[in-house]
Amino acid sequence: MKKMLKPAIFVFIGIIIAFPVFSLTYYTMVRTSTPGFCASCHEIQPAFNAWKTSTHVNNAQGFVADCMDCHLPAPQDTINFFYTKTAHGIKDVFVHFAYGTYDREKSREHTYATFKNAQCRKCHRNLLNMPDKRGAMLAHRTVLYPKKGYEKKCVDCHRNLVHVDSEIYKYKEKQAPYRGLGI
Image (cartoon, rainbow, N blue to C red; front, side, top):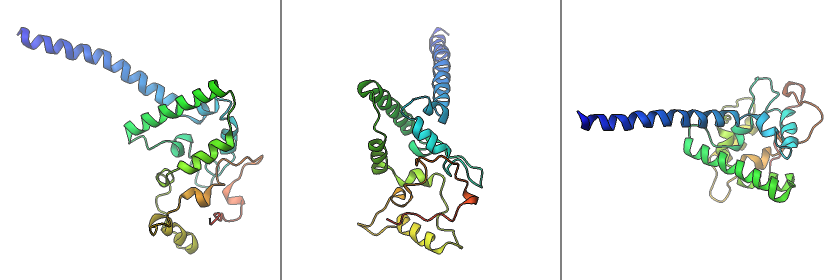
């Protein structure tokens, strides 16, 4: 009986310790995964303001793509999500305190250089089903199935969609059809 009691005590103590630690970690991740939290850093405020006026927030579909959707791996990839989120947070805090300034243009170019198409494809999955937009469908096909040496990133053509400063809200239904840069 004593042999079974000792492991049961360790399991019970483990549960008592693990549950609050897991809960606090989850709570922290949820609370720090909102656009409002990102905007609480004054260096990020201009990017947040530009995002608010973009079609990733204001669109006919009513869908909002927030900071986490584009800048972090999908939450289902838990280990990579936590690692990347933590690394971004530490980097931002370090830049804030070590340099005191934030070079938005340099950060933007670095982000475009390291951006992966999978980030866009988390939301934009059905890129080849655009029967009324044959040119767009063919352009996306060259990105999805590139020939060796001709690989492209989504942001090569769509870099002016989100973090572009604007004084007005750009509602999709009140604009001319979007045309990518075609780079």
